[in-house]
Image 1 (cartoon, rainbow, N blue to C red):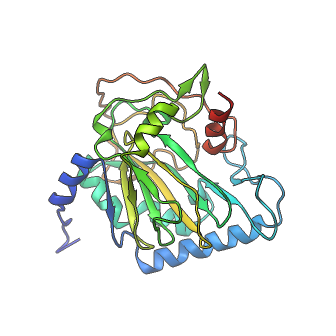
Image 2 (tube, one colour):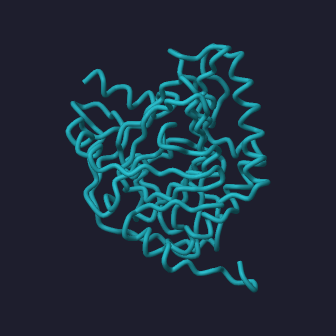
Length: 294
């Protein structure tokens, strides 16, 4: 803010519209970053004493997702915390106010609501990878003004499993995440091979954020270092975007207005997409693991 008015970021808005993503430095304040990492450290320590995924979100699935084939007391493999803003003031405060959210409201308009939030972790030795996909088929809405913001809780480097994106792919087709009648949450092997030849790594210091359009093709490799790589991931939508499928991460915070006001207007755009399968698994990591069985 400057003199009580939002600072305009015309160049950043134009860059986002062209590429479908951008990395924003200092998206979090030092105090926000410290508070988030304090809660995260507590949850990682807590996970050591559990042999299976635990906790509970609104639909009964576990809140804390462990990669069971590698998890142990000495080497915890906590890979996902679902809707942490429901149980953490630090997470909720960031969902409601941060520098990246200011930019989201410039890109999509003044009225913005919260859709989902989660923490994805790549702890040393966990082996967690994300296959290439687009988020929009997981979360179809009446229009395509959907944003995923990934807040870096650690320094993200080329070696510790950074987000990899395909610039401009948000303006292209929506690819199927269904294969042989199974919802895998990932594009076909042929499309993924092509993506790997074009991928751009999104790196930056802790406290930065990557803003990513929901239609942008992306994935990530495993963490090859002895340092953690953790992201607090929040999805925002234009207020006039109405969901066309159940929220895969149901939360009491779904639909919370974080900028502007509620208008009661529904805006629709023309597109076709295959509806997703509601996850029975703890997280999409298990959905994507089905690809190896096809």
